[in-house]
Image (cartoon, rainbow, N blue to C red; front, top):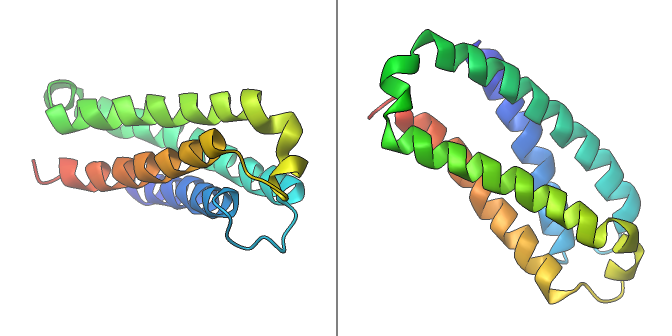
Length: 131
């Protein structure tokens, strides 16, 4: 499950980081709507894979993990990351074509927070093994 979990993390975080970088203004020659549609599908597949494998890994060592402060922070960041993505879709999902001309400041802030949150989730996941 650990290798599959790592694959899920890469499948989630890779597309999310690429999408967030595009939202921040990188690769503006690529139209945002189709880029977003494609990368979001990949990220959702990665998230589903992470949920399944994460639950399996958690179940194997639930006692110590439930009280682990790093695990608690990681789970809070996962909830934040998902909530941020859902809020982003609700706020901007129908207006992504406007981003090619003028990306809104709040949306760019959401993209930056997404990068920080998901990279932190991955880092904390690795750190749990050493705590």
